[in-house]
Length: 168
Length: 115
Image (tube, rainbow over all chains, first blue to last red; front, side, top):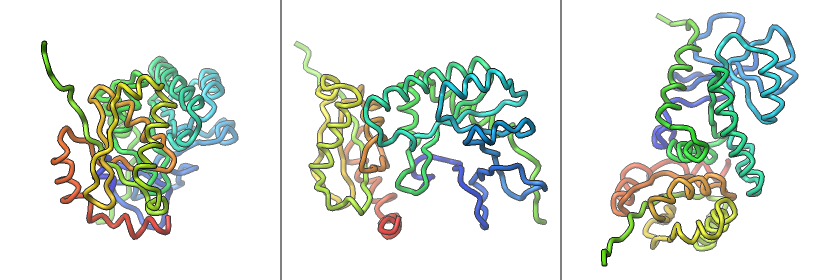
């Protein structure tokens, strides 16, 4: 289905079976080398408050709070800031409008500090998936050039690649 | 006087089974309402959004002016009930062909009853 919606790689929670074209979202870095691709995701401030915890990706819900937190924290690695469509998908117009302004500002912020912005559907089922074309439309409204966005995202994902266990 | 028709884009959307009993015209009305809510009544009128005649039971095709495509896609993304935008084309016939060859056989319909 993702392929038909022009999405090459999807992110998802870790399950017993792993697939090559899925990047798994983990809450903690695994203690050993894994055979699958993963990203360590922080979606609460409690997780971030631990000084030793460095995520690959932070889910942004409270835009202002996260911006001031990141300014103080100054991560050395190039982390990503992820916004989820599912957070505002069914909200009223005013809330959606505010979200668009916040994403526009977050993109400028992430550019300034060298972080990667990720716009994600936040889908938990096929029906909540968003096609690449719709995501690009959202980008254009937020003054984000889609071509540059996809290129930077691809580079960022390559940088996050960790050595993987291969079965011979 | 120069008489030139503006270009249109055709958007193929599908809706999950649980809301399939919702009439497609009622669904189209909801799309217009959401488009108005997000981008304003004037923009909604200028977009000239239309509902195409139904030929496939699951596929709903709506069209709009090319220049309004991004905004309409955003409105469709932020819709309740959830709609899945599966294809966009400059020609309604191409859209129908692609639907028939690529999408109509998807096993979505069985799964959606439980999801």
